[in-house]
Length: 372
Image (cartoon, rainbow, N blue to C red; front, side, top):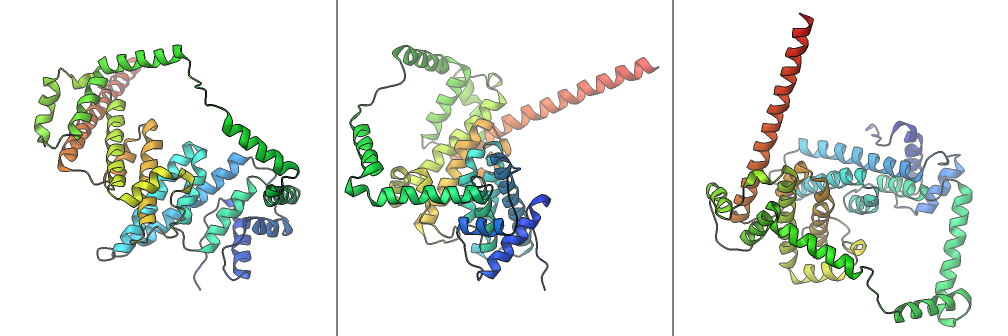
């Protein structure tokens, strides 16, 4: 018999075991979140001592542990000739990066769970994730009953909407009134002037000039050898030493965003769905991210890559960009530019590392001198 592997933190291990047991007793089916939570409460479990954010972090930790275990198992296998296994490895790596971002911004929990649900095969894993998500809002049986009553109330309101009775009539009138309200800009003219002034200052700044040339370069078909790029910037009066490491990294993310949007625009179906759908609905029609034929799954993969760029850029995560770099189809010209910028970053980082090492060495020498 294969030993069961558990992924939850130690204090939730019994909850995890209970979910696996409930799933098994129901024929290993994907179960309703409220049903799972009710069964847990019947067994004496509650989540009253945990805050919402604590439970969210439990979910992230659980998914991270599962992903790392699954990845280590797959990487042992020979994947050279198995395209689907290689894709699964890439998808799990994508999930791990998304979970890292979600740990910094808990608003990305839902996105992480949506991605995980398209990768995880075992229903017991999905059920634990779903039950814990429900526990964010229902810490005990009373909370669950109250939530059910509210759900029933709003369901009845929706069903009776056409009759024009009670709350449904009020909601209908409110929606109609809202649609009639003209849009009023929230940004005052003074604020708009400030934005315009800031943009003009940006264009004149070293980084503004650098960014303008980078943008012009990636829109040109002409390919410059990497060795000639430095002189190209110098000819435009740009001193690369004036561009900070964080600005260089941000530029890499901007190039990646530009390219991933081009990849989305290459296919009419994918492009139309990407720009016309609410973000939470993108990928809803993709059930298995490893489906190589499904355009909805192709869209989902591109969307999650795009989202990593959007959400990861403000953090200036250089390692995240390196991960994304291998997943995006750059032209040779773009690759040359990226390699040139990466060399600038690596040189600065090495220089800073050496500077810090020198300072530490000098401090150690001073301490030794004092002792003597």
